[in-house]
Length: 439
Image 1: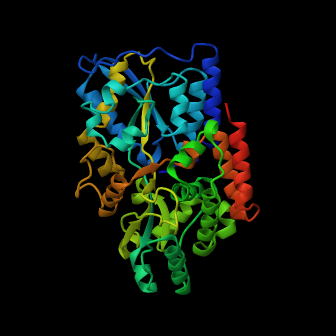
Image 2: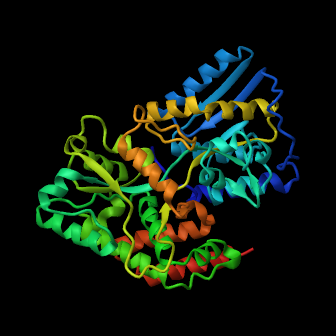
Image 3: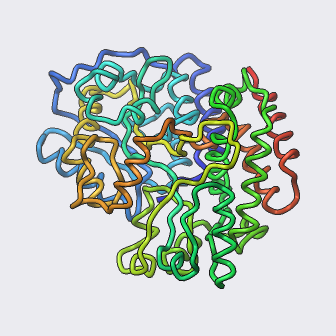
């Protein structure tokens, strides 16, 4: 499952579409009360996801099961690829034709929809202290909460980890790193043994930004980071930003074989290389563990495990932070049968169906207690334990920032990889973009 260049250019396009539809006064919709105690189980609920292809079976089953329980209901389901979804949601937003239920990434991407009044406030049904909300991990619900109001329904718990091949580590005499310096030493040890330390491809830009997200959270104090990610309070003057870019460059130079050519290398082929036993490490989301180490793959036969990207020495930020954010869904307040639309998503996220999600797709759900020994791997359960223990979740850099800043980071880090830009030049461009985005 591709995490994609979340906001980036498409974020800007969605923002423009939202601005266009709200400027005439018809884009925002008055909020209604959502009463799930007396749902009218009749009519149609339109749903769009970004789970086409290998992942589409889950929502197909949810549609079939819900319709079987409620014969007078039709779930009108549309499933798109990542890029297809981004293109489609831009068109639907601009034409004021958003479906009843639609996918969203957390962070600034989702906030564009909240701020333009095209999302139902779900605080009364899924917020803290509600029956439904209490079945979900608080950090997941919090990722779709703004100014005390909860707007989104978290669907998949997602965080970033380094996966490693246990046999390759053992054969090379390499140890699991405990800090950033020891990660570089591990890469040196693996290289000396004739092994590729780490697969890395960045043709879409976002894989590099996931490294930077985690390093920024380590190197920059949390309050400063939060202020800088909002243009009205941003300065980007903290030296930790340059440190993060320097550290990322060291990882690319010392741990990967793609190096300066990584911008032309596909993330998914590099992911497959790890599964085939061609490299010892790969930085990947836990949603993708199953695709990264398929059943019967060389990596599975060799044995594999996970660790969090190690913390640099003298880190001044939140060393307990973990990069990640839940995927989720938003509800259109214009839905003809609003309670039914919300009830469908409550059905999708009940414990039984949350367990099915993990069984079918190896995707961890935010529903408490939905991961079991029978439906998940030890590595997936360990990733969720670490996510729950994290001091904070660092939302992807390309969704937590506004699109102009995300795009400046994207192009800047691509230039850093290619050797065309220094860390200082990257941050100069980020500062300029942030200044330009000030309200």
